[in-house]
Image (cartoon, rainbow, N blue to C red; front, side):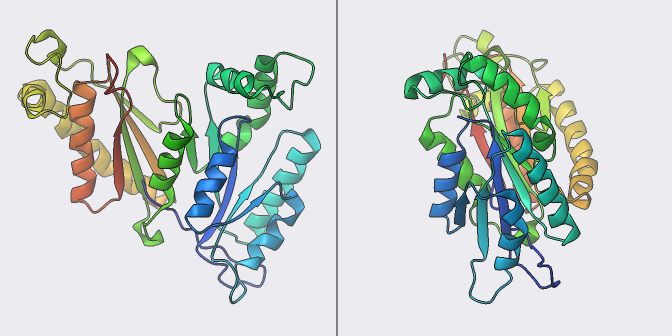
Length: 301
């Protein structure tokens, strides 16, 4: 996935530049790492900005010589702060500022482990268990998550892995591309990705796992690919999937969606889902749509 460089408009109606991004999400999910990664990409990053100043920052990018891409870390944990943030976002809409929201989250177990590793207290659970603070924050952030343009699930990701996801999402693509696509294969036995817009279950396809000579090979191997693609079920499925995408993708673009995350799942995430994900990547590439393909569980046994 590559960058979404939005065009913001200042209060005077002038062009406010090609990048106004808000970074938010759950505490411990990687907001700081995302901010550092975006800074490396040339974004002017501001942390802990009072929400009331968001419109002022939007106007900053309209000034000659000012930064063309701004990323602001916003924290909606406090009740008063959340109300101010909602008001500021409404004002941005009234000013016709075309902003984008990046929301970071992770599974409860991962968040708990990260807090235990750093010996930090959760901001919403200074005296309670960390898991209770996470629960409170999820409820508080639910509406903001629903407004997000891109959700990244950092579950199981190292800081380096999260950095790669950020770089994939925000580097190189011009804004006129319209839609950035991320395709991830996964194994249902390890859980479905939380940040997927479309989840496809391909466990109905013949499984190479039950073929002795194919079992140890990854889905990227030509022999596994030929086995999966050689069945009638695969050809019928891909024909119908491509027909669906011919309807869905233009609809997403027309609605102004900037990012599309597709998750393809099989049992273990090593064979069938990998083959389909690679084919789906070629489908988007043939149509000139920026895309990245990742295989989350390919290295698992």
